[in-house]
Image 1 (cartoon, rainbow, N blue to C red):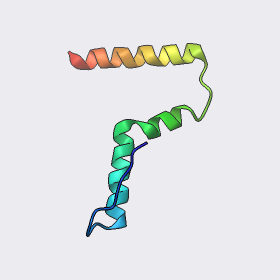
Image 2 (cartoon, one colour):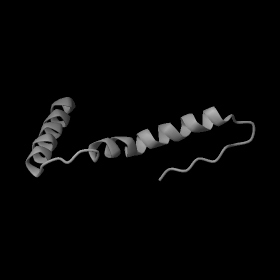
Image 3 (tube, rainbow, N blue to C red):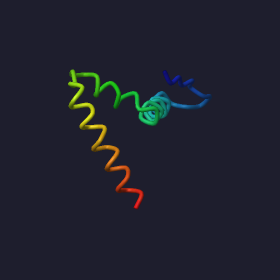
Length: 60
């Protein structure tokens, strides 16, 4: 879990923004959204295959 310490002369809003960026970079929010609903194993495989195909197409 990301941890943010408030620096000297830093507002709470800036620290919160840094914390949110850290969560986004680590993929915590995306994982939470994915676990919100049950996903059948066949649907998970299909999604992973689509993502792999998308990544492969982006490299060319």
